[in-house]
Image (cartoon, rainbow over all chains, first blue to last red; front, top):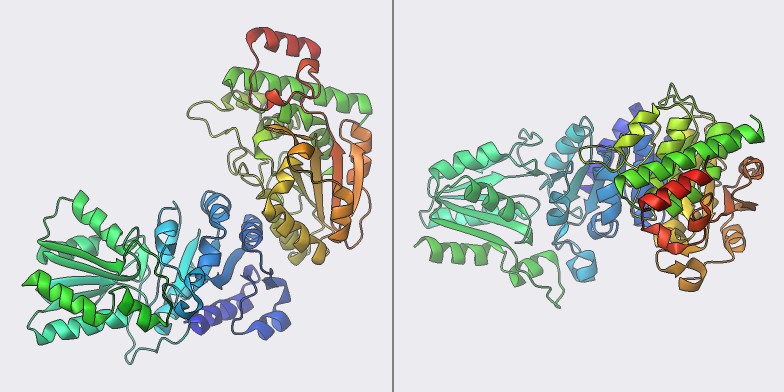
Length: 305
Length: 267
């Protein structure tokens, strides 16, 4: 996904001198090409993320469209107030690229994980949030964001996510069906969608038909689709590699409860409100936090039977 | 423009500040009065601006990073003709866009939102980079407070601007040595400013922040291949004697009696 996002921006920047790419000293593709071919549109700001966001805001106030690149916690939380006041309050064309959402950097410890980023970005007016699950979505959503105004947070994985076997259409702001089933509906986003797909398969073997929605755009949320599904399916689950507080699960719960829909069963699968001291690779930490396919399936089976 | 004309502008601006803050029962009168002479130097001499074309691409830009001194900037922009003075009546009033901290888009001539300290210099750096990328000769002026200098983000921006030789960036430090709870140098001593900034690859000059002619000449100091920092020695509350050097005028607003007394000093 890192390649897909940065490559899309680089290609666009070659044609548009007002696109600027800032990195907080984080490696990325095309570094040499940026420096050689469009040096006025590229800066390694150094390890100073508050300054980086402020600079991005100043550039945007001067008519530039800016992309800011770093590891997820450093481009959302380290500089949160700059994102709030400089970027969102002024509604500027500053796009934050957060690499390694969730537990992608799980081996490095909690400082490099991000289970809070969607919640804190979601609360900011004007901010849009996308979290593609694979390089195809990353490429298409980046291309669409290039045509949008105002700030966006692009939450991506670390780079090992495979390209999907079949191409499909992706539209910013619109969730899409991965599977259709009448018994339960699952909403998910980002690389953990592969686990959600395993959940759907496992439930299928138990004769439980599941709808799976890829909600790659978390804000603005495709409320219409949520309401459509809730109308027909009264058992709703959300799966995310993020805290159960403030993420997609919260967003969908807010819609369902405010609209007075009666769901028979609703459960958010996400990271519970704790920091584990244990570290490990992404798959390991998903298991530890109860968001691996196996754990989710067993809990869903106890809930629906 | 003669010194006496510049001084008249300063007095008119101070009078507007006192009226705005008295009417709104708001704060930051001392902070606003203290930077007026710097703003007069900038807006009536140094900066390349056209009050009738506030969006002109070739303009110089000013960012008030100590956004709480907003009344001074609003009054200066009105005095310079960016908008009618009647608009100042909206300052800090319900339903108005003219906030106690400067807000982008609220009035013509406001280049950036500020209020939370330590943000303005980075935005100024971004503007300076954009000007260079666009091959413009525009300068960017950023005013921060000496207390604000304690914010870490200011130092991130200082280091960046020096390293990148942003010679179209001019930082003005409002050195009144006051912050909310007392003397800035006693709370967290950031002196010596010049030595610190020089070590970060900046050019520097220190000036009397109330001598408009000297301010103008300091702001015009040639500083090839380096950003310039102008350390302006100022008096918080300057122009209203009973407010001068009194930290309590950071937050207080004048009573009717004090208001009348202040205006009588600004005739």
